[in-house]
Length: 264
Image (cartoon, rainbow, N blue to C red; front, side):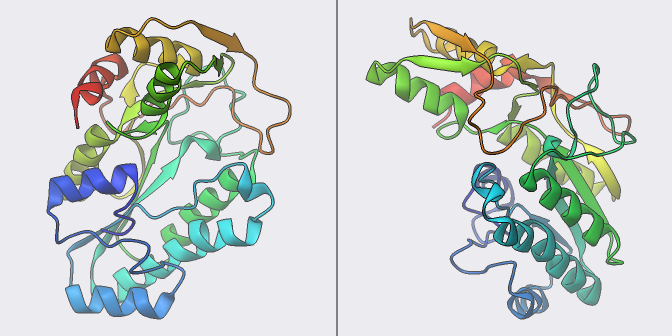
């Protein structure tokens, strides 16, 4: 499992075992030779690639780095998987869509990324699907963990007494990393290939999620709803909600949030 240091990677390691994860400091997927050597040595049946360049705004001025990690890197993994007979499960994002639809996006909808980050993730999808390996691309949205991610940051700011100003014009499926990891393993065991959307049931705006975090934590703090700041370097899809015609939705986001806030 590649990219073990992130929110999703940590949950994959928890699920699959401590010896399965590889940190970015130990292996960069941009190094094709190193990726090939690792897969040849370990001989996995399935490689889960959680490694990604996720700095959405920074990607606008670091295009080369974003494409190296999000496009060429996954291709390196797919080529090595094909060579050594392993399947690949790769994670992608709702940012491959422009957010102009009124309804949640399904797998058959045409991608149209707005940002460099979204374009780099879409190019990664294209490259690995063309690489000839058994590939599953799992698109997801607004992934959060127990002690990390948006909910943890909201609680941290609230307890510091900082003002909470949260955007109200972007909608997403807040998806618990633990649920997503279990879904990815299930899909891999079923031998699913192609593109699949795996997200929590239900969508909400970020300010609604912030209020839910505070309510579930018993913290009284006002949340000011604001429009997406005009100074953001990268545009975001206003409708970032996903649905699937190929896989069940995960449990409702509020239920998984409640569990995540109780988890260490």
